[in-house]
Length: 152
Image (cartoon, rainbow, N blue to C red; front, side, top):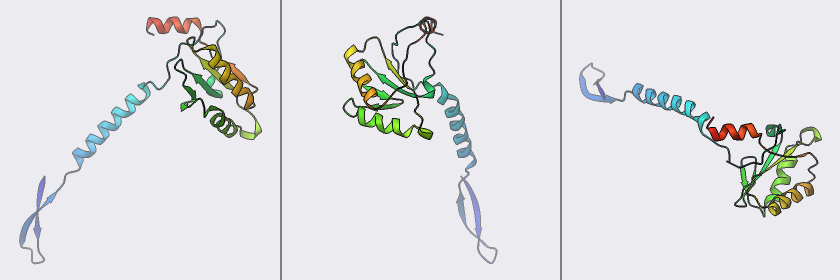
């Protein structure tokens, strides 16, 4: 902390006034900002699922709404966790909001191989009741699974 002399109107020195040096504080904030910018893309935000495999898997789920069913019974609409009981109403709200110009976006259903068949059918039934006509099932290519198991 640097102390500056205080002067009165006559030019006499009175007391020392403390002054805070903010340059080191700004340096710390800039370093933290750089660290955050570097690590943010690395953070994994995906939900890990064991999708079924298919040789012709080519869907692009970024163009539509993704509904994921996990083995523990939880349901996700894109990145939002939804209770199974609230799924029909919440999905209809999201599906209605994402219809620019009256058109409908495709819906992609992802369910791991461990998910009970009855849970998948229940969600499929709710999607059809909401008016979904363009529905796709997400799978992963066999090469992608093999590459993930090898670690790259």
